[in-house]
Length: 431
Image 1 (cartoon, one colour):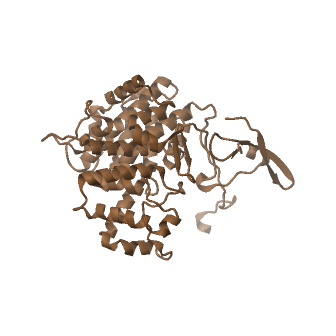
Image 2 (image 1 turned 120 degrees about the vertical axis):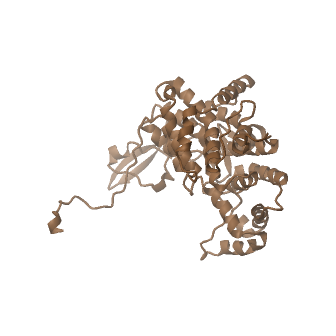
Image 3 (image 1 turned 135 degrees about the vertical axis):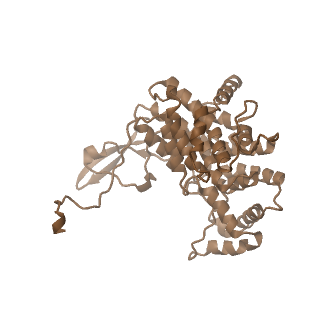
């Protein structure tokens, strides 16, 4: 925590208290209210914590007005175009870009941890075939603590390191096997000769009956999806991981909690909602009708995949994702796919309409990622599991940072109580 050079004064009923103000390296100043209740006997009220900093962090910074996303200071567009996912994982975990030797060692470590304990196959087979892949992921990731006892002691830095590597390495296998189970196909084991993204695609789409070669364009697009979703500051799922971690829970339980939070349609399900909207539109000819509905304040219809709660300008991740979308659509073809054809035309018409551009309702990362995943052949039920797989390194990095924070304490939000005051119990005969 930096030293405070100025204070804010809070006055209540003639009494005043000075509250320290801290200046970050980027972003708005922060008023320290940790001693407010002890000194003034009042709490602050901030539903959703949208004006409250829950921690200090050095990992990710977002400037929504500028449309800026930085990982350890590096702009996301540079990382997505010049780097690759495992290099970004190293950056998030350790704070600096790796040397060639460090990257080779890290990639080798992750590759050697991709297999799951063979008994975990039984967990998948215990679910119904129509179980949502996210339900399977929550259960299997939580169960990892029952199999990997040598990496659950959060007080041991070495065990924390092993747990971090295991989670990043095994999450693609868990997600791919959840998909394979849902479609009734045999599990495909990871291969050490493939890249992280290519290995995931191979585990999803290969079958034992024939050879499957991952197209490098699809592998690169998948890698970009992973990279662009790797971390996003203190969002709902990351805050959930931190809150679970604050109790001293093991790392697998904390990440399972993050996956459960991400499952919500307001968080990780946005790209699925976007594809469902495109299917509702049905064909490019109907786009003007739905654009008109989106402009009508009395119509509940909204264009999913446009605009962003944090970014008040163009989503910086969307610029890179659009490039991948164009490459994938050119490779896979959109002529025979009405959903993809509708998406391309909707993007074109919305960007040409002053209503959307003036309100800065640009296509966001969810719009393009959904298009790419649809073109690759993933069902919408797999969109959020792929998001969870991508975000695992962010959750793990935030978890590690929190455990090393000397100010770490168990989370305990306060409340504005509006219920009944104390009253005496009445016997059932008199009610």
